[in-house]
Image (cartoon, rainbow, N blue to C red; front, side):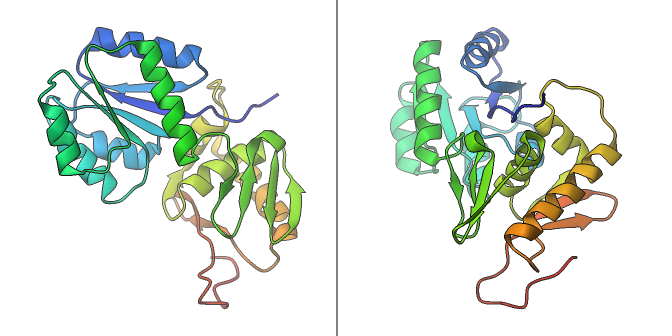
Length: 239
């Protein structure tokens, strides 16, 4: 039986051994983990894959952590925990007010870091807590979605698919990305499988919010979730 994809943590760290140890602790705590050893291309990866939290080292080959954090924060509210081996940089991190949610100074305890990750996720409501946008409320643990007092129950796959799109509202997600999010066991499925799930999900959402198309097809690319503009009652219908 398919399960909702676990929160994805991105580690951007050039110390391979440290990244491996932290990754092991995070996986043991119930997270999925990806690791980048350089800052080059990190922002593009973050925009493409939509991690739930970023562990970002300050000193990186290629693009440094400060500029990555600044660039990410200019277009996303994904939680960021900065790490640094230079104690004197802590004041600089705080002074620059880059928007990082927390910071940890090396050497640190992996257990403490996992606790910080959980605390930040709880605080920013990006884990398995209900996600509210003013339009839909997602409750992954109950497999439920509600709007204006009306509730529907989805299958685990449908809820995971909606959660991935909902979290990345306004962004186009490829079929490959959606497959990775809803099938964390890396099973082999085809593009048609995703299209079939999208079709069923749209049908269920139509029961909840008739005449409002929330999931839009982007020909040859993938899908995008968009909620109607509350100031524009005519923003309805399929794309």
